[in-house]
Amino acid sequence: MSTYAQDFMAELKAKNPGEPEFHQAVQEVVDSLVPVFEKSPHYRKNKILERICIPERTIMFRVPWLDDKGEIQINRGYRIEMNSAIGPYKGGLRFHPTVYLGILKFLAFEQVFKNSLTTLPMGGGKGGSDFDPHGKSDMEVMKFCQSFMTELCRHIGQFTDVPAGDIGVGGREIGYMFGQYKRVRNEFVGVLTGKGIKWGGSLIRPEATGYGCVYFAQEMLATRGETLKGKTCIVSGSGNVAQYTVEKINQLGGKVVTLSDSDGHIYDEAGIDAEKLAFVMDLKNSRRGRISEYATKFKSAQYIPYDASKGFNSIWDHKAQCAFPSATQNEINLKDANNLLKNGVYVVAEGSNMPTVPEGVTLFVEKKILYSPGKASNAGGVATSGLEMSQNSLRMSWSRDEVDKHLQTIMKNIHKSCVDAAATYGKPGDYVAGANIAGFLKVADAMLDQGLV
Image 1 (cartoon, rainbow, N blue to C red):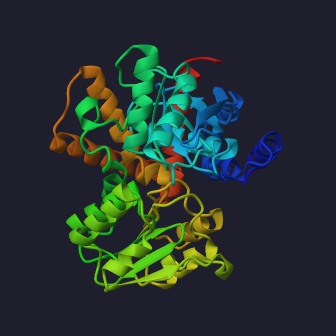
Image 2: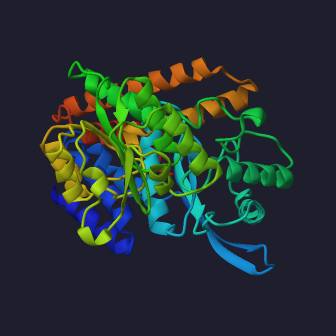
């Protein structure tokens, strides 16, 4: 790492203490950008990196609400409006007990580059709350969402900031928040994405992150003359991203043998076919149950509880060729990364944001496997959110096939941008460097064009 990069990171950590996820996300980008600053010193002279790492606006607020017992509950609400150089802020809202400023800054920072890669005019942002929707009644979730949006609505808008869903925020939560936005602002506009199909949502949006991740994996495999057909795949998580990753892998002839939640994972050597996936979707989306119930229902599967004392997650210790981490950040540690390689995995396409620790990323890159960072391979979700914004602005709805074709084209273009940028800066085949460089250049050049703002 160059002296400039070392000094920059030391200052960033000093000014943003106690935010390890944010430090990790910035470090990865900074490491990739060293050849860019050597080749184009004007980015350094104009302090683009220093500016891009500070949010344009950070909003924090309290969210009071009444639970079903009539007790007052209070949560914290956040919105990080990171960068608007190429379009209105765009990024999800996360409702989870682990949410704090550092997590959201990391996610917003990643979102800037991810949105840049989509080629759509979207800036980067992220938000959410430490509210936990699990175990809450629909009435409690509605009351929280209404209180949350009552404050947030004054900071967002179709030309300013367009939030979407993320962990803990699905169709139910988006519906409640959109209803409250409309009520308070007295306008029906495309201010949230992930809306219901009947009132402004886009076909393929629920599927988009998972589908897009699989499309990106297909593009990577194509560089070696291969496809997903006949490949055994490990998928983590069991929410929206994981579900549609499984669906698309099945459609393309692959076989998925795992799914997980925070308690453990199931291993089904026979494969998670359409019937089994339908059970998972009902289990998770409607009944909000635990993945362990899968093994009770299907005798071909075994359930393995998660044991943190092992120092690794056994979901990554199964024979396979492809892995799709689709749960949460830092779910693959160095031991897990070694286990994946040991078991024959040579394709890792990230469906979640930053699921691999830095040492694992370094290992994957050194071993020259087909490894794509989340900002590239999971960009299909926000890309289709961008398509939803376009449809809202046009007051029209595109067909399923039309949206899917747009999504496939966008993922092909992201793949090409990563490959080209990596080759241009002397790192052929390195998707991490390619994604970071390609994402950065578009935003940096827009910032230079717009002056010191």
